[in-house]
Image 1 (tube, rainbow, N blue to C red):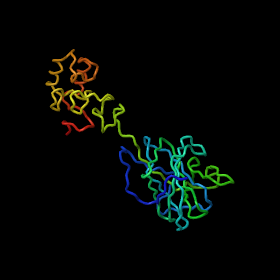
Image 2: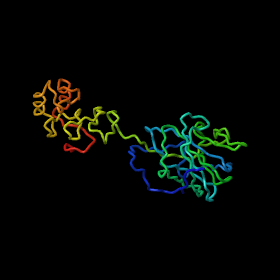
Image 3: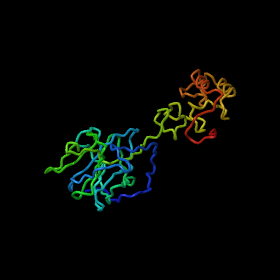
Image 4: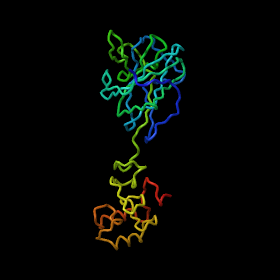
Length: 287
């Protein structure tokens, strides 16, 4: 049983509570508007045309939409749409991640979009998108006619008495399916690699996973040698550091080792005559 029914259309709905940082449209075909294509008329009900994609951006990623050219007839048909994990790259895909239905009206020229943002599909690497036919013949999925095919990226679930996966080239399909997937990653930028996203990191250029901020100014101690909180690191701050040197002042203990010493002086020296931060959090020293 399919889990969701929806109609292919342009929907402005966006995922909420997700930090998206990069979008990528994945395709195997070379089709551009006006190019010749072939609409595959040989499919029968239950068979699937599928394309495999390998994200180039960092994942986990959400599959936002599927774009395809579906024509050869202007009839309106219900199609199945499925997404599988496909890291192994075998003829048979991995775990099924999503399945639903979509209503498409054939067009020989217009690319159509299937919006998937209402049913977030998370992928962590290569995945496969398939369109299942509930009818025989046209309208069908297009293939390009540039004379090449990526045999590792185009597949058909064919009915040979039982449904069985084949590389489409093995069934004499000569072009790449005009099926594309747009993904957006869920990896917020983390410049210093400390596991805290930049927009939540109180010190974005020095790894400080504990986010220690003893003076509560939203700038982590590792980046905050501004001990008098005037948004400048200078001889006034050096004087404060000197007054507690070899002591146990929390604010002057920049590296959090429990003592004010030459390590903290080194941190101050590296930013002397500069400003504290940078911090991804709102703070009084934001310019």
